[in-house]
Amino acid sequence: HPTSSSGHRSVCQAIRVMPLTPLPLAVVLSALSLTAAVWQNKEIKALEGTGRRLEKLNGQYSPLTVRKDVNKIRQRRYSALQARHRDLLKKDLSMLRVDKVDRENYKIQLTDHQSEYTGPIEIGSPGQSLDCIFDTGSSMAWVFSTKCKTSMCKIHTQFDATKSTTYSPSTNEMDITFGTGSLRGVLARDTVSLGGISLLDQGFGEILKPMGTVFELNFDGICGMSYRMSNKVNASLLEGIARNPELPDKSFTFYFSQNEAALVLGEAGRSLITDQKMTWYPVTRQFYWESTLKDVKVGGQSVLTEYSGGEISAVFDTGTSVLTMPTEDAGNTMALLQSAGVTCDMIATGKAPEICYEFQGLDDICIRNWYEQSAEGCTASLMTLDLAQESVFILGQPFFNEFVTTFDVGNNRIGIAPSGTA
Image 1: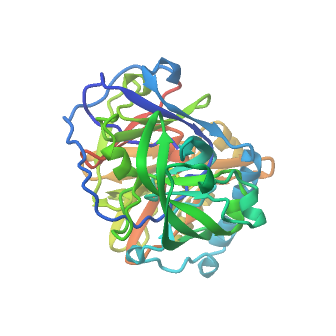
Image 2: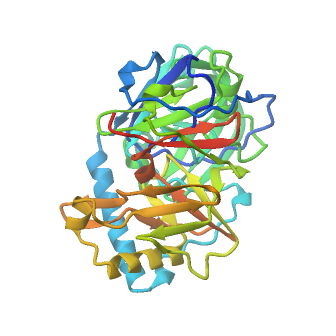
């Protein structure tokens, strides 16, 4: 959840904020052609301030709201987590192993679509309003289209190209695979508006054939906000934002609290940051929003196993509702929690072990509340994910719930500060 990036620059610039509604930000793969977008290189200056509420922001913003089907989402997620964790503790890892994914094939998306927040966008002229999952694990926008006649499509608000005077069609089709489903669609161009700014002639995808139960949930589209993942299609949402003259600061911030949530375009401002200094983590590869890890510990003990070979990276993904790690490391984590005698009472009172991500020469990122609780019981908010030749640890919603996160494209870095109690 709370994760976004904001440029370190004077805080006096205009703020564009988008309210977010709880929903999973899906990780969509986008093939984008090279565009001449130039990200502004901002002055390095830490953002500090005192936490104030969103209504104190001096500018427009897009509020995020909790999905109407949030209870259904949580129950489905909890059941899936319990089943996986039972198998992990039995050491029957073969049941959980995901086929090793090579990111170079540009097909597999990391997001699980189970996040709980969505935010409003408009597409077309006049604008058609849609509720979108803002996803830092994918790089373009996909929305349900009236060209799709299936019952699954019709339960969503669908974009109608025939009602837009600025719509430009294409014959370019794409197939996208997610961890929880897949889709087939066609690329198009139109005006896309979000957070008070309009992106003219912006590339996006129209969903023609969704496959997977995840698309039965309550959202109308996925708005990817990661780096381009391919150079074949000119549809990068970030590059569209970069070209827009209304937004001089090329950064965005995710903010979540118990009472409000938002996506802020441009500088987040002092009102979203606590009195603690924001720590900046370098983006080590411009693909996902990722930074190199040194170690991952639960209750002070490393969970890395002998299988944690190759590069170890933290990926900051608003489209994933849980934390993820490689299967063997997840099995080690669940065994550590079991040996520590973690109970639901310990979780409820904040006495359960926290999980800490360690970076070379930078502050650790420790998440205290990374557990799921329901009427049936409690467990860690942890899933398994395996990539080929590398170990990836996704920091999803549990992380964003505790930190304000700024995605600073101008300086290729991720700014993180405790969210406080605003």
